[in-house]
Amino acid sequence: MVSIAPAPVRAHPRAVLAVIGAGAAATVWLWWNGTPAVSGFGDWLTNAGRITGLLAGYGVAVLIGLMARIPPVERGVGTDQLARWHSMGGRYVVGLVAAHALLITWGYAVTAHTSVTGQAWTLLDSYPDVLLATAGGLLIVMTGIVSARAIRARLRYETWYYLHFYTYLAAALAFSHQFAVGAEFIMNTAARAAWSTLYIGVAAAIAWYRFITPVRQSARHRFTVESVTPEAHNVVSIVISGRHLDELQAQPGQFFRWRFLAPGLWWTALPYSLSAPPRGDLLRITVKAAGGHSTAIRGLAPGTRVIAAGPYGALTAARRRRHKVLLIAGGVGITPLRPLLETLPAAPGDLTLIYRVSSMRDVVFRRELEQLAESRKARVWFVAGTRDELDVNPLSGGELTKRVPGLTDHDVYLCGPPGLTSTVTRELVDAGVPRRHIHQESFEF
Amino acid sequence: MRRVILAIVTTAVALVLLLTFKTQTQSAGPAGSPASVVGSPAPGGTGTATAASPTGSKPAGSSPTPSGGTKTVTGTVAQTVYGPVQVKITVKDGRITAATAVQYPSGTPRDYQINSYAIPQLNAAAVAAGNAKIDSVSGATYTSGGYIASLQSAVDKAGIA
Image 1 (spheres, each protein chain N blue to C red):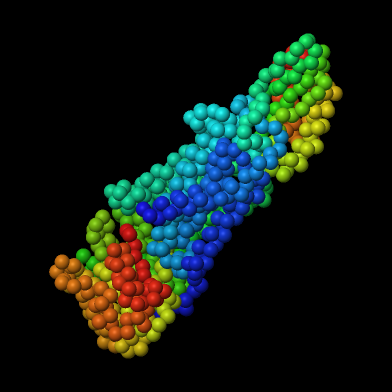
Image 2 (image 1 turned 45 degrees about the vertical axis):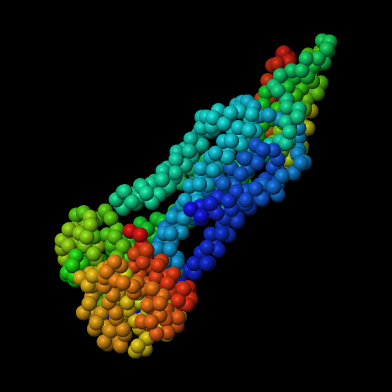
């Protein structure tokens, strides 16, 4: 018996962006309201420094808030999309922080007729909270540098992840100078109250959703490893048992972050999609046991406790708009699509799965997929071969239009590596599929 | 890379627009150059009265006058949380005959409001007392503190006992 929970509330991406934009406008208004006049070069620089400083302080709160794993936002926007917003916004905020420091120092120097270096020294020396804030600013710049693609590729994911936590420290260090020296806050109790509310709210969200909730959930549901079974070359399925799983309202297509309390795995939370709809008190994930964690994953003993946080992800049936659905999986992207193949309501012939792999050896769930194809009267098409081996790109717009009759009338669910998903999305759009009918999820892990 | 350029350009344009809106030629109070940071560490304030051209910048010092009669002495700039305060006194025969603030915080409406009543009171008190031992004006604690500090340095420079 398969249990599908009713879809819970989701926040629309545009609504989230609108809220963020409104906050930014309110932040600029703080400056607008507190500044009667600006004149002179030094004053211009100083006020530009104030605006960039305010936006940087607001931006840091927003960036942290995007990563707070607030369920309606995760469901509505999608974890991968939130990560992309965070990464783009992060670069912008690093720029704002640097601009703020430079503009304020220069502006003060011009107004006071001192040299810029002299003014910088005065700021650091005579204004104690500014020294703290500068340390915070440097931490943020460091985070930005470490996240640059060239450097991040050289780091282990966990190293980069834990370095990133320095941003919390940076935010704390920079906070006091905002009230002590910030022109818009010194005399304005209401502004201080609002700003504090923003920061306290974000901190509370982080504490609740990222730290407390996983522990709460694990205590309530008692996630435990049931079994570990090999599926295909280097791939294992892990069945995890739990109690009261219906309360999680996990939708096919979603994933959890799993922290296995076993040697080598307890200090990292790994995101894996459910590879089957929740069944009674059992959840199944299917994992490519390669790389750093492979031995540890394969050696998981039944009875190992798990701290699981979730469900996350927006690749669910709630996005669906048309009768016909096309599922396109690239490699390991088959995992969230397999439960969708099983549960998406569809008439015989309306459901198609295209499973793209480098070689047939990489195919996972072959038997299950063929059985589902038969029982649901769905078409399942395995496309194997690297790009060099195949003459023609099987996922080009032309090929898809040929293979999938009525392509433009389909909802398309797409999951795979970022390169594949962005290429296929472009091909689909060119072939006439409306952008809003393409639902994709891709992670750069 | 294109997105980066777009973000930078958009931000710069937005900043310029915002600042242009706020640029006015009218300014309250005379120009001043807060060159020295005297006293407790202070921020740039909520906007001191600055004009575009630093005409009549008043250095901390005394302007020499003919005859041993009247002289004007300007005290050092005292930094307060809200901005710099600087007092100029007119001394005749060793007595303060006039006192005026050449710099005081006036960047926000609240500054204007407070100091429009506080400064005249402080000026009058300085003349009445003949020295820097005057009371703070209630409701204008910081300005009073800065005023008194600057007034004291002017008094010291003028050599008034």
